[in-house]
Image 1 (cartoon, rainbow, N blue to C red):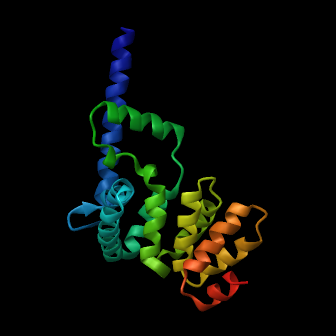
Image 2: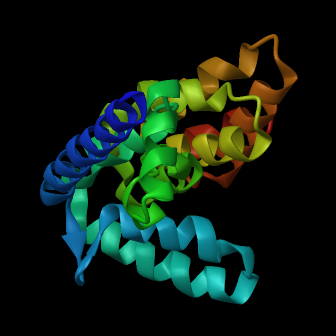
Image 3: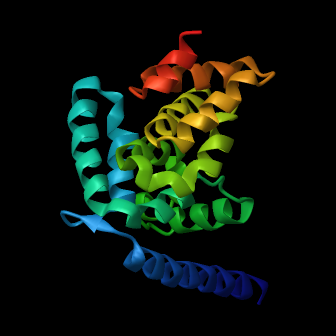
Length: 193
C-alpha cells in the first residue's frame, strides 16, 4: 500500500510539473522554431569548442535580439538560483525521461547573463539581478555579469562604477573588466584610472 502511494505521488508530481512546463514554454519567446531556453542551451553547452562557440554565440545573439525586450523576463528567470524543491522536481523529471533542456531553467545563468548584453538598454530591468550576479563566487558568472552591465547604458555602467569601491577584490575586478569591455566613453575614463 505504501509503495502504491509513493508511486502515485511521483506520477502526480511529474504530471503537475509537465503541465507547468508546457504552460511556461508556451509563453516563452522563440525564434526560428527554437525557444529562448533552447538558444541558451546552445550557448551554454556548445560553447566548449571555441570555433563552434563563435558561430553559436553569433546565431544566439541574433535570435535574442529578434526576441527583443520580450526575452528579458525569461532571461531574468534564468538568473535566479534554483530552489531545492526545483532541483528535486528536475531530478524526478530527468529520471522519467524528459529532455533536460526543457526543465533545467536555472542551469543557464551564465548564458542568460551573456545574452542580456545582446539586448543592451532593453535589458535595463535586469540590472538588479545582474548586479547580484556580479557578486557571485563563480568568477565566470561575475565577469559575464559585468560585461552584460556594460552594455546596458548608462544605468548598467553606473552600477559597475559603484562597484569599483567594493571591499571584495573579485567584485572590483569584474566591474573593471566590464568597464574595460565597454565602448562607453565615461566607462573607459573610469576604468583607466
